[in-house]
Length: 118
Image 1 (cartoon, helix red, strand yellow):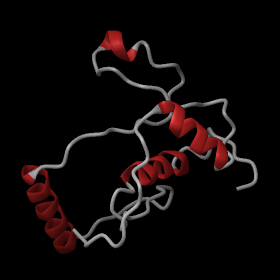
Image 2 (spheres, helix red, strand yellow):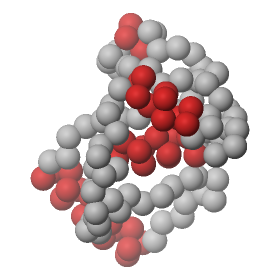
Image 3 (cartoon, one colour):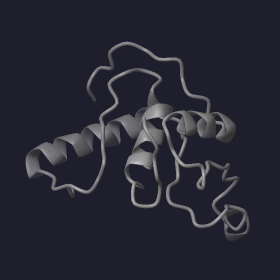
Image 4 (cartoon, helix red, strand yellow):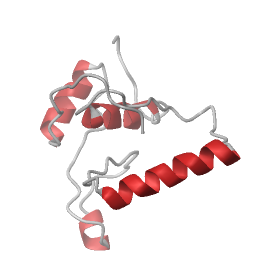
């Protein structure tokens, strides 16, 4: 993994904070961020529909880092084809994962979401 340069204050994993941030980015608030309390059918039933993106927060541990290194090596050897329709930016700043996750969600849902002037 590339070394991250600089460090941001992390974006709080809180739907209210994310909704305010998205509104400041110019997003039409007909869609909003909500908490997902679990992945079983009952709890997923509480998620407002339609749902166009999910942000997943999870801890990074040594097992995940090792897997990432193996995948990076495999991709360098075999190559990787990624659709031009996928919006992706690489996180290079520490603590920016919430912001980058939000930008990925918003960038990959441009057909469903409308934005005003940024």
